[in-house]
Image 1: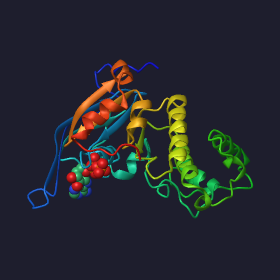
Image 2: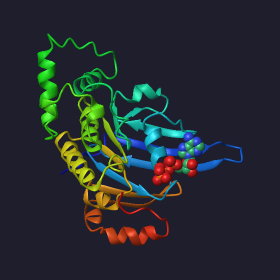
Image 3: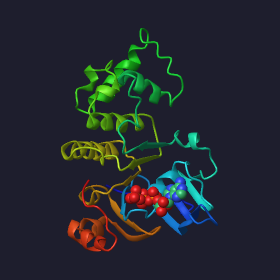
Image 4: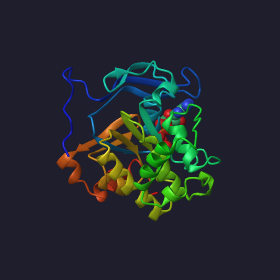
Length: 269
Ligand SMILES: Nc1ncnc2c1ncn2[C@@H]1O[C@H](COP(=O)(O)OP(=O)(O)OP(=O)(O)O)[C@@H](O)[C@H]1O
């Protein structure tokens, strides 16, 4: 796979520059997390992020999604500064799949209703079922991509699906409309080993077929090594390993466990 070059301005597709972030400043609970943190991601690159507990992985995702404000620095996606946008505005161009399978979908709604909601980016779905056969056919064809037989269960409430099926549906829903960035927030961590393998394989297929720029946080070293084009390891708000292409292909889980012994990262789920 070829990674798209930087734009004419030399800026990467996703860019976090000179980020400073302190939680609870000037209090006993003060946490100085980022002091001049930088991360650049090229278009269509699939980056896995691993790291010690509290190293700042989730905060990076929250900053990109607008749920945490930075103290200073700049954040751009698709060459547009986004750090001052409201959180809801981010969902128009960023898809996020969470660890908790109940977060990406509305359990009490059917598969069809969930897809219609996502298709309208959360606006009242007002789907006129009788006249909107074209849309339903489209949703069915999208569900076929999952190879889980859900295309024949459109009217089933999402609550009755397994965790793995829900995560697959959440992945589909978050990438059904065009997005600039896909964020995977430990999205296999709550699944059994077999389901997490299946969701990971589906993730890889979607990322490649839909040419998605992707940032995945995981505690699963095997997934970080086996999937993606680049592996970033974090510790104490900084990047301690950044391996891409040949360097990443040469990485073995043992190299990472050795490196991780000192920063105690769980291996596997
Ligand atoms: N909203 C918040 N308020 C106060 N402190 C926060 C907040 N969010 C994160 N932190 C602190 O920032 C640090 C980094 O947290 P973060 O959740 O980003 O780490 P992480 O690398 O995702 O950790 P883990 O692997 O344990 O999920 C932690 O010390 C955490 O307590």
